[in-house]
View 1 (cartoon, rainbow, N blue to C red):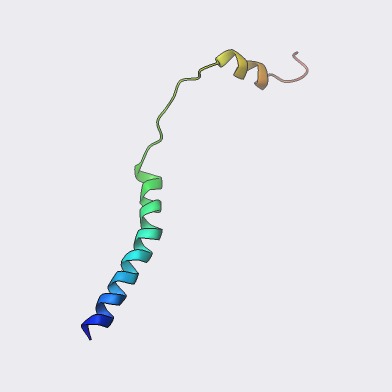
View 2: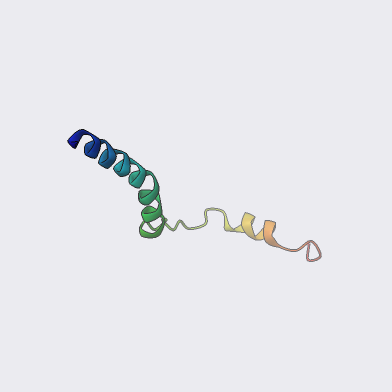
Length: 52
């Protein structure tokens, strides 16, 4: 029956959209690189306690 086939294809398409699209986006979309806004504060937080 075509109704059962159509329902199966619709459900399979929804499962594929929920599982495959995030996986593809993880590998294909590159995050934007932003420069550090307050580099001195980052350096202060990252220094070891013995150096302070």
